[in-house]
Image 1 (tube, rainbow, N blue to C red):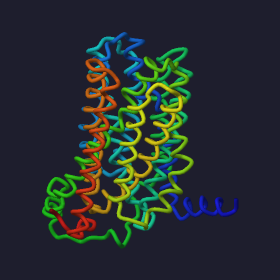
Image 2 (image 1 turned 90 degrees about the horizontal axis):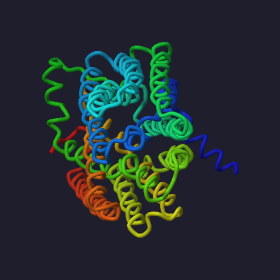
Image 3 (image 1 turned 60 degrees about the horizontal axis):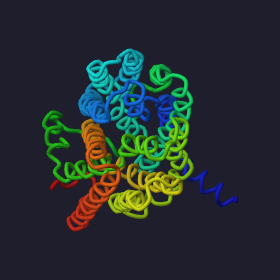
Length: 414
């Protein structure tokens, strides 16, 4: 028992105060994440949109996320991470309060795009801010703590959202908006405006514009390939949020509260074990090799659904395995991005990395809902198996190339 306590203590110790502050702010923000997990159910059962229309709306959220991420990353490098986070939280919160008023397909579509642009500018700014406040030794754990706070909030959000949705879906938007604004207020009060400069990040360049051009993520071919593979992984993973809730509702007969509990299990698993897993693995292997294992677990999760998709043990096993896939893949993806970037272009690197997820937000709902509409859920599981296998093969090849050419950080470009 003492050894378990020591393990958890070591996993959480040594992180700077501002990393904990950023994590707490994200916890407040994510505790209000109630709209997105229930969006497909809200659109189809409350506003009576078709499944295809629901997929289009969710994909438009992804399109807005792409624009928001690019804007957020660019502004983070020029205006500063704190200012971008503050603007995103407050404006995004206000837009969620307005989104609830949209009832037609056209109105919802427009408001979803605008809300996504504002709210998703937060992600690259927050990720770059985490990198600014930590050291290389604590970097992966710092991102893991940030993810832990996100997922703890996500564990609370859908559970509370399921209760609220049982009475009124409108309360989901109100709660999401108010928690965004509250997080922005806390950030403005407590987070320092200018982060400390670490010696290992100090770089003197005569011509900053030329330096940024040469170190742009768009000129880093190895990183661009990595981003494409991340987007493929996220496209498969995001079925958890888009088509799986429909599967639980239509095929498994679960109500909104049960769906919320099932989705919250993902957050609970991450809160309980991710920091410890990252602490034990962070110096054991290259990030790309650990990511490969995570992608392999996603493949396994959809293999289970292909065998048995409606039994309680199967859907619980799916959630557990996809959760461990996320634990092994995403923190090490974030750490890899920081290793490839320089402080002066970190916001743009984080933006392109965030775009990988935003593109997946576009592709995933359309892919999933169209397959469900035309060929059914059974074919969807088979397509996702092939999709996961292709992604795994891509990361295997990327890791082999990295080891062969000894690519470390931003020291080499393909």
